[in-house]
Length: 100
Ligand SMILES: [Zn+2]
Image (cartoon, rainbow, N blue to C red; front, side, top):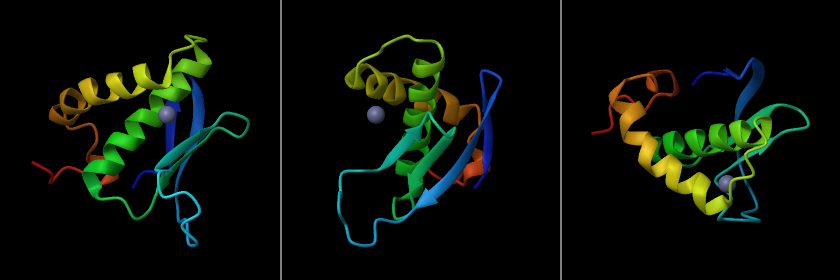
């Protein structure tokens, strides 16, 4: 998995996290604007990780460009863009290249 990504000229650290105590089982990822970090839940399946990664990238773009997209819009863009980006094989670096 890659550990850094450039988004609009800003370097974001990419990390996995574990919710050992299962405090929020619906928390799959987060984008921390204050520290330029994207965190992805370690236990997710590879395809989910890819989707969450893209979702958090879109949050970063939304924040940096002040688009003010709604959560639903972010997710719809992620769902739409994921297969396109995946087919372009730019997601190989986070280990999702073997997913059909
Ligand atoms: Zn979100």
